[in-house]
Amino acid sequence: MAGLLPVEEALARVLAGAAPLPEEWIPVGACDGRVLTRDLVSGRSQPPDDMSSMDGYAVRSADLPGQLTVIGESAAGRGFGGSVTAGTAVRIFTGAPVPAGADAIVMQEDTAREGDQVVMARAARDGQFIRRRGLDFTEGLTGLAAGTLMNPRRLALAAAMNHANVPVHRRPRVAILSTGDELVEPGTAPGPDQIVSSNALALAAIVRRAGGEPTMLGIAPDRLDETLARVRAARETGHDVLVTSGGASVGEYDLMREVIAAEGAAPGFWKIAMRPGKPLMMADLGPMRLLGLPGNPVASFVCATLFLRPLLLRLAGRADRTDETEDAVLGTDVGPNDLRADHLRATLATRDGRLVATPFPVQDSSMIRVLAEADALILRPPHAPAAAAGSPCRILRLDP
Ligand code: AMP
Ligand code: MG
Image (cartoon, helix red, strand yellow):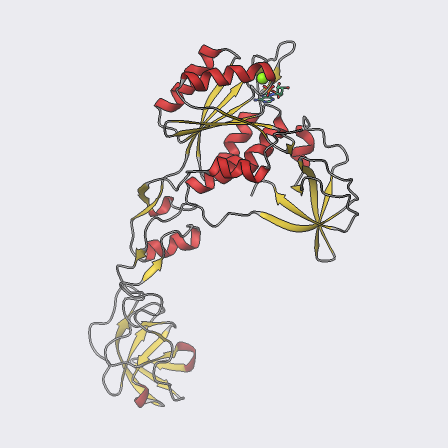
């Protein structure tokens, strides 16, 4: 088959010109999974003062061992206003500021208290149980660099540095359109010859996991006016990406071609050297990139995994996820591959410390159930020779 496009080349075309989306400021509590557009500099030092790391007494180490007079208390958020002078101690709690004059904390367990007197039988080391001002971070420190992917821990650091709002790349807005006269939404009563549309919902879930915001545009029948109206709606509402599924059969190509031409764009129709999912369509409708996936559910899913997800990660500024493939070994023998890169649905297990990928015996690309039971795709390059169980292979985990 001449003119088949290698998967890598197709991906390069899908990603061509795609750059991280512009910045927006969002509440720090909402930034999990987002990528910072700027360095976050700390507006304060933490701890803001020297703090006790124990419940006990703040003392002058030179006074110990000895008996001291307790002259006050320092609690978290309510420090002692005075000073620890010779022969005195201040009752102190974890996280409370160390009073002036004190240079050590003696743990409560090492003391005997009676009235305002406290006896400490052992010497204290200068600085013991004191967390110094700025131990964690200091004012002016870049605690989180531009490009950082936020997670719950980094979110906590941003908040601790006193950022109420943080600058992140905008999330990709992704419109999803199913096409096909035969399709009905799940939960309706399908008539004869009708199929329940499942692709759009799977695509929306993939979009969310890749950091995007999906918009459901429903099902368009195989008619130019209807399809065009939905494509225009997606454009007018400022989407970054429009994903369509279906319309990949020979007669329907012309429909999508007309839609794209009517929008004044140059259509790219490619036959990709891959299985499942040979046809893929791409066009730039102004700032909105249209990605046309095949309707076949497994092909639609695999193409979304291989092309849509990397596009969305790129738009979201996720430079951390460029190659998501991993090493494994085959769980069964596999035959030689033809000229199309194959993506075998497989289960994963760990045996003797090795990741073992076992392909399902039936790989029919229409089987959603097999896809649902799979953990990973085994990537078989074009023309890969037959390989025995135990041979190395590359895999792509599903639903990262
Ligand atoms: P097409 O690419 O439009 O020729 O569709 C190929 C196959 O995928 C046909 O059997 C369709 O019924 C099926 N199909 C298309 N769109 C969907 C969808 N949204 N959900 C489930 N199956 C679909
Ligand atoms: Mg169709």
